[in-house]
Image 1 (cartoon, rainbow, N blue to C red):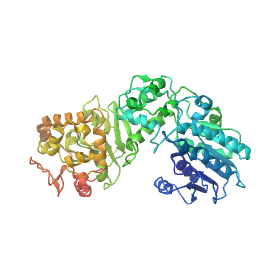
Image 2: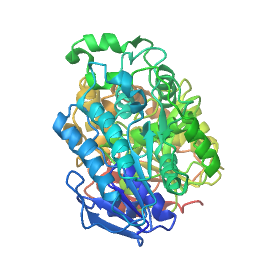
Image 3: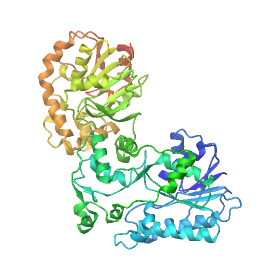
Length: 560
């Protein structure tokens, strides 16, 4: 084998394995349980050069394949650890890897990963808030250096900072999650707090290049241009369309306040510093090897998209691309293809674009599915919803089928009437303006001031649908500040539009089809094709997606 990676199932280790395999190397992945192979397969990585080996670095290592390069990406990263638990991997385990590497007849390099804060180890060791995790990393760093020197092991230490990218939900991610959910009243630390980042892709490429480089350098891998923490929080808040805290609270004050008031783990406070790090060698190495990291601001925005799409680790995105895009001057959450969709899908209340996931799986071609302004994950817009929809459709170069559900049927109908040359057809699913205003949804939302705290199970029961990921996604959004209030306001405001939309429906020039559930019928007669989905209620695309998809295909050819 060319290389072995310890800690291969971790966030960094698995990406390193993928990078090495992508370079054609034969890689042994040292794991306790093989969760790596399914992840590599999901990332479309060719695993023919992979060998899974069982290893526990807390014990002396034996019966492992002879390799040229050794990477130790194993580490116990958590706050609140006991000293014994932290040292078992971060100190004892690291030394076991050094000792085993010393026995390899053709060893080229041992690459050991540790924390970037070890560069300030002398200062950190005197701080009372130093926890078992950080103390063990500092001790492990010193022990590895000493043992490698004693055993003549060619060693390179890589000190990455906070590593960001898809799948990273710890550390800084918890701060972003609090910001997203309106639970970050102040920025922890001072105005000069520096919490540097690097991307997982850049780090994996950097690590892969190290064994072929000369021995003797150690590298702090981080972006010196990472914004200071208050600016970083402001950047992400603007990108996601949420309010940024205006004040900072020093680490010293947070340390003196009870944890039950601050919600801050004391072990995290040592990371809130203005320290800078010796990155000159890493920058020179990257220049020599042709590596270029993306700008930190772009990487942070992209990571924020990943975090929101994955609900900070509790869900899986149903389609890509996804992320916040500027529509009508504000951040709008957009899923899918904004230039060449075959269907544009507009959700109703109280849902978001995830409502369409079951139906989209049955549709041919790409789709475009936004969260409406002020709803779901999208920020409120200062412009009317019709102007927002026109701006959303601006980059579209196809003539897609415009599919709208419930209260979104109004904006969709007005757009189709104003721009008949821009859409191939219009499909109205459960159009609220043709149904009884005292529907189950209307009663539940208008009579539910506690909608913001409604759990997904109760929301599913209220809507008459199964509690699936789409409902859980909607419930998560309703719990954020302002979303539930805007849902109720949108529902109340739609009542006045019923007559105008009924009249406009008779004049629209594009082909129109109406799809309703048999349990949620129209109450107004229309001279248009109406497809009834047997056994469905107000959300047939959730409960009967295959049947709804067939009606869409029959109604209007995609891209007509």
